[in-house]
Length: 39
Image (cartoon, rainbow, N blue to C red; front, side):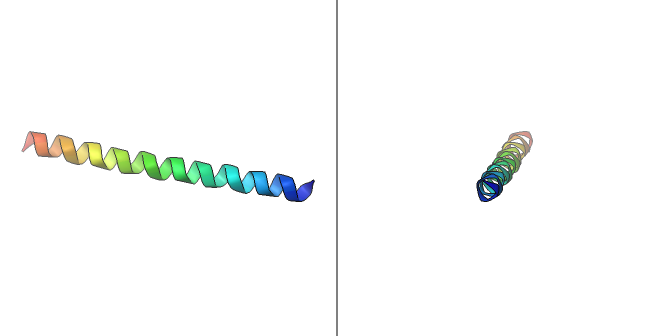
């Protein structure tokens, strides 16, 4: 039981980290695209 909760917590943490990385990457791409439009 404890091992399962630890495993699920690790999966949840990994998913959150992956979402955060994707969010930062898309934001950086968007800002670069807008910067290219403004130049």
